[in-house]
Image 1 (cartoon, rainbow, N blue to C red):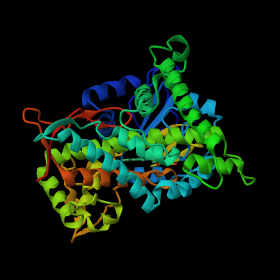
Image 2: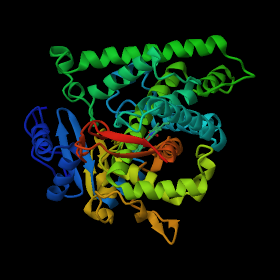
Image 3: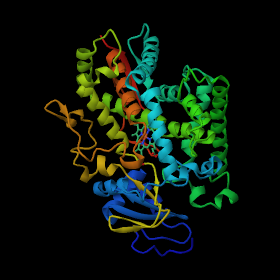
Image 4: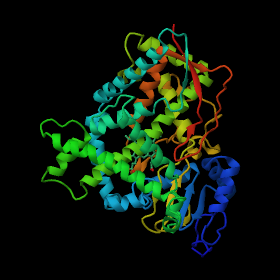
Length: 478
Ligand code: HEM
């Protein structure tokens, strides 16, 4: 804590003060730049593509250069997670029995999740129909709002939250809430609070554990614990219902197949009820805000670039027509819409960080030593928007950039879902959601700037970046 000497050959970065480390410099740079992703991108200009920081007791290494991000994500030595599965899950990890801290256990769970989700959601046919049902509900609700009117003004930045939550919860527990349902509101509130109590590199009470005892309220620790207990209870209630109605011959969703594994003689050591609940929480944490905010960026840019919107609508009209909703089967015939999705994901991930990793042992990255247990995180701006990304005019929404002779071509720097051992588990679902929600809404409505309320490209700096609140004028298409 008091030591301000850096470990030998630790990556370069701002100097450290006793106790706080480089927290003050990060805060200053962040205030000046407006965003943590911009602050660390600027630090990379000064210190190089791998930056060594310390916040309280935590060593934090931020990776920005495109080659260094690849080296980092490919490294087995850097494939740990900081104690829990996500963000700062320390207290959560303790309660759930630290299973996810062990990489082999997580890889076993990961393989199981991927296999099962293919059946209960990621399998092409049922995933498409599940999302189509949800998009139909959204389109219908817009039509109701527009009944008898020429246009309505809608807040768009959070328009997709409940629908995305529904697609996740359908897969996990077979439940779809109506937008007015009080359980859905409570789930949304709890998740919102969970996100607000942590930052991408942890929370003050994890970097300075003493705050848990001397300032549990101000440091957010009390709220963090209470909120975790609430989500735990919410998930546990559902698990109880699943156990009461479980039928081996009618497995309905992910919870059911996990329970089957728990009841089976082949059950492996890493499988337990706590782990199942932890997976559900991880899915919510990793899958809800990421997808909803990517959709937010998508619609923000569609109103700012009406030509892009028109081109996408022409393709939708030509391939799908107006008599049925778009489905995933249309995707191969809709390269322009696919590129709209790719560009929306770039706008989101290019302002985001990966999930933090942890060094299993002393190891190397870009020639520097990364000490055991250091947290390592990539600033994805480096590969998707930074000077090395090769993306021309990175702030401009230009789906055409991926099209060469009518075919989609992606550079090896395009990694919005990461790669390697911790590559995103939800990529298929996320892409399908962004594609189907966008295509279905554009099929029926035009979205434009509300006169007098020009949108801004400034965004929210949080665990996940999102557009600032913005409105769109929604008009039915002729
Ligand atoms: C636009 C949407 C999304 C984006 C941009 C995104 C991006 C990412 C990234 C960059 C990582 C970290 C890779 C790493 O640390 O090496 C990740 C991990 C993860 N994502 Fe996503 N994600 C999205 C949606 C989803 C959805 C819908 C789900 C769930 C169904 C999901 C589940 C996960 C999980 C479980 C992990 C951790 C995997 C592991 O540690 O092995 N994500 N995601």
